[in-house]
Image (cartoon, rainbow, N blue to C red):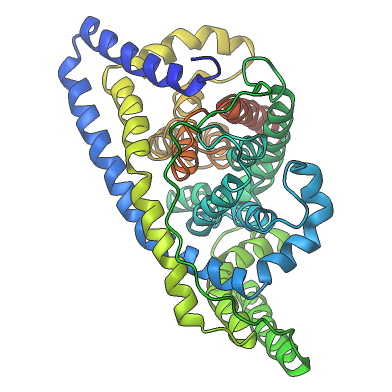
Amino acid sequence: MRGHMLNRVWFGLLLAAVLLGGFLGRLHETVEAVIKAAETAVTLAIGLVGVMTLWLGMIRLADKAGLVGVIARILRPLLVRLFPEIPADHPALGSVVMNLTANMLGLSNAATPFGLRAMQDLQKLNPHPDTATNAMCTLLALNTGSIQLIPATAVALLAGQGAANPTAIVGTAFLSTACAAVTGFLVAKMAAPLKWFRIEPGESRGVSAPVEQPARVEVPPTEVTPLGGWQRGVLLAYVACFAFFIFRMMSEPVAVVPAPPTGVRFVNAVSLVSIPFLLGFFPLYAVLKKLPVYEEFIEGAKEGFQTAIRIIPYLVGMLVAIGALRGSGGLTLLTDLLRAPLALIKLPVELVPLALLRPLTGSGSLAAFGDIVKAYGPDHLLSRTAGTIYGSSEATFYVLAVYFGSVGIRRTRHALLAGLAADAVGCLAAVYICRAMFG
């Protein structure tokens, strides 16, 4: 059991939920929550099938056309410092940078498939198939505390509730996520050599029972030719079209008073056009490289379908434990116990349920955020702080289950610690930054 932090957390959540449900007279609610969580896990995984099939097909186009390698070469000086375990010429670097970029832009539909592809590339470098590598733990920490340019969901909820300036949290979320990302990265690096997480020399894990890897369909290598002058011109024309789209969006009148700053409107416009841009750019680049785009897309799409189905058991296990704790009243009890200690660090007690739910469940934390906005109004300090908390962290347990489940990782080492540290610092940073900016 040494180093199996996730085993202990999962067991502790389930045991605590069952016992608390009995003592609090909520066994029926606990069972209902478990059944609903199991159904939700399957629904989530099935819902990911289409998105992952689409994006892993697109990723294959970009990979076969050499675009992923181009991106990795441009950012190689930064990536080799963040991920020194990855060889400088390995395709995993390209997958990692595409995942982190999609997260920064708030493109969750693309970020998850990019992240799963990065995990699969990193697994090829893994000498212990059931154990997370340092690079995997770092990637999860950076996903949990990813820097957000636009917290789109939080802004949309505030706007929907009639906030005078729903984009006011853009700056606070950016600063909070920066604190969370730095914390997650540092904890991932500092925890790796500790004896609780260290892989001992000669320790060979996963050899006797190798993890089933995703089936890959090998295709004959395609000759990739460099872009000529007219081909570059076509790409520039395509990019110019989207630059015009962004300019037009920024020129449109806004209903919000006061109008958001120009920089915020620019980033928001970029976020809105990024998905359509990528959907056209990847196939266009591949066509210009004379690749059979449909056939290559289908090969990548097959992998996306298999990956989405493979993560179902991991999602069921994680969401059932979280659902059981919620149904038993454990989260409510924990909130009450933490009110006094958190008051000492000036964390408003009204934000405690959101702070506890955010690492556990995206839908639950969104509901808690919505309750705060409805109770205090969209322009209240608590509402803006809640929006910043929601936008500055991720559902760590969900990310861990999906990412590691996609490659059969059982021993997660220090990934959970780094992710929770990023969540905690992001939450505290959100409270202090919002108090300083909004009073």
